[in-house]
Image (cartoon, helix red, strand yellow):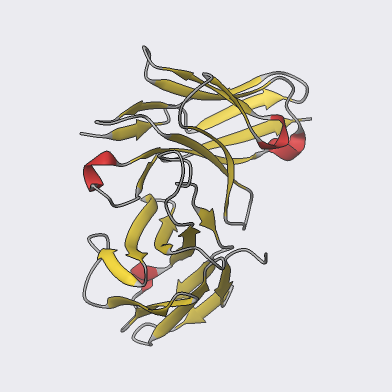
Length: 116
Length: 119
């Protein structure tokens, strides 16, 4: 069965330190992978995606993610965290078992807290 | 572009009342998704439209929920009668037509959501 796992409910990091939010996946087709961020009382905002090509994908607000096919992972990273990065982060993958349906399978989210 | 627009932003109603949530997708987008977000169940897909036609409504919890998309620029999600367990944040997201490299246009764009409280 296809799935997305975000193994950490919460990640805490000090401002200025590097951050990593983990995501692993299992899909039956090509892994089209996405990261979204949700700030309090806001909708989800697209950060970045991997479709093909370079395994290191750069996105908005200084975030990047590394696609690792052998480990079936797509971890979100940032070299230096800001307090304003505190938010809920979602990983998602294209649902291939939905046929032509363009659905995504969503992780449960990881709450990132950046401490001053 | 104004992005995906949802109304109302907040809705408080009493159990048994009818609730209608509204969504205007991004102009030119031809797919629309309704999601529900709760602490217990996370983000759940309720229904998905393509070219105004419901393609997958397997996530609609029960007959009390219905959704329509009468044209490319408007969709509604209706709950009748509403129950306290329907309290959640409801999001609408839209997607541009498929084109170019496969997967390149699979980025969903979300509205700000409607926070529904059923007393």
